[in-house]
Amino acid sequence: MSDQAPKMKDEDTLSITVEFTGGLEMLFSNERKHSLSIPIRNEDGTRTNMAALVDYLCQNLMKDPRKDLFILDGTVRPGILVLINDADWELEGEDKYEIESGDNILFVSTLHGG
Amino acid sequence: MAPACETCKANPAQIVRPKDRSKLCTECFFSVFEAEIHHTITSNALFHRGEKIAIGASGGKDSTVLASVLKTLDERHDYGVELILLSIDEGIKGYRDDSLMTVKRNAKQYEMPLTIVGYDELYGWTMDQVVEQVGKKGNCTYCGVFRRQALDRGAARLGVRHVVTGHNADDVAETVLMNLLRGDLPRLSRSTSIVTSTPSAASTDPNSHSNIKRSKPLKYAYEKEIVLYAHHKRLDYFTTECIYSPEAFRGSARALIKNLERLRPSAILDVVRSGEDMAKLVPGSDEGCGGACSSAVPAAEEEEGGCGSANGRTAGGEMANLEQQLVQGDVATEHDLEVEITLKTVASQGTNDVNGNGNGNSNGKLAHVAQSSNARKVRKNKGGQAFIPRKTPKQVMGQCRICGYLSSQDVCKACVLLEGLNKSRPKNNIEIGYEPEDSEVQGITNGVKQVHVKGD
Ligand SMILES: [Zn+2]
Ligand SMILES: [Zn+2]
Image 1 (cartoon, each protein chain N blue to C red):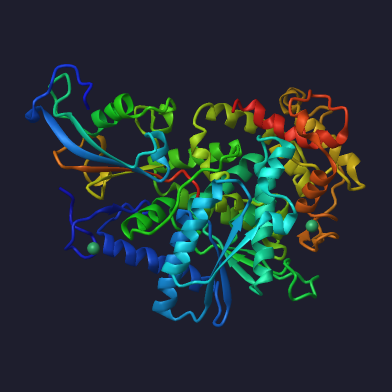
Image 2 (image 1 turned 30 degrees about the vertical axis):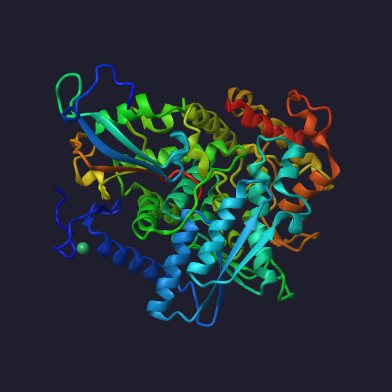
């Protein structure tokens, strides 16, 4: 993202792909696939994990004001599946999973029309 | 790093099954998912050899997975059934274009013949025209009532006596909760049965559309697994939400189910099983009338096209909605449980019921319609004058005298709605006050107000 205040060096960022499907893309500019560079560490120096990513997406990527359709009570809304490199995020530690460069993170809503 | 698959012990696990938390690789997940649906089909004897079966296909995940799995299973286990796709076009401009394209691709992918039936052909009204007439809010009732019959009518045209739909465990659990919260045990009982319609004894016409069997082969399949199956199989499906307002109560029930699943994933199947057990306790739990009685309100039919199932999106004010609906539920439970089903529908749900319209026996019903719009006041007067216990006729299944559809009423829900549509022009009265001047408008605006209150 170009709007990061102090210019980040490559070693400070992670290149990842984030995808939204199952209707969630509607909340993200109707765009299914997003290539992102995100900070490798949070402001407090800890590694960027899923919790931080979800927060980041909400702050920076989501233009739709209906934030509660994506996060609820500080985490991904129930009914939205999260896959990290095609595996259920429950297998990877959920929001504690530390993001690696090259990761593919997929959010799928199960809440939409069947 | 992900642990190894608990079944094959070789591949890395990619899926955590909600029902038992087992960790599986995709291949092992496919096998067990398909095997369980096969088990559902065989243990309930859903199909018989030589049967022609229409899959109610919306292009969405549930019906796409259903079509894919049924094709796989028919090939694997030689059911000897003939599978076709049946889609409904509600006539909502733009809304169906993409989903019908998806269904057309599915027809090629699964080598199944496809028939698309329009509301205009069946009812003389497209949904866009209905909305023009009744307003944008609270028209999902029309959509749902029409859709239920549309599948049956479409099937009858094709000479098909059996329609399978993609309703999953989450849908059923949601419906069980809704009916529980409304105190509507008879409908709870019907909504849990895997075969929701049986042949009408009254029907002598083999082409009658009231003689169609409905079943739900995915009844025990979690929505999460359906989505994962579609994802990992790379199935071609379409997602959208109904562009018209969803029914908020279902949205609240859905949110509740999803929250429960987060806390305890087995909760969904547990609710389904509880629903089945409760159904057995309902006096006269009439498998005989099957889901046909629910022509009053198509329990979960609206899922087929995205109406209702889009409700996860009505996030804001859900608890307020729920509370409001609980209030209405109170009203419903103050009724004798034996009350005629459509009455409760009106009182507890506040749907766009136009029962008063055009059919002679309007008085009693209108009273209920009127009161339901004052549900909150009624609560304060709990046990007071609001609902006078009535002598309640036992529900008797007959046929709609207009269209012949199985109905507990003289005229079925769809025909009542149609009569109202054809007769009245209430579209400018959406904001009408609580004392409608005219009983015909009242039935329609009642539902509109209910939706309105929910702060859409
Ligand atoms: Zn395996
Ligand atoms: Zn009828």
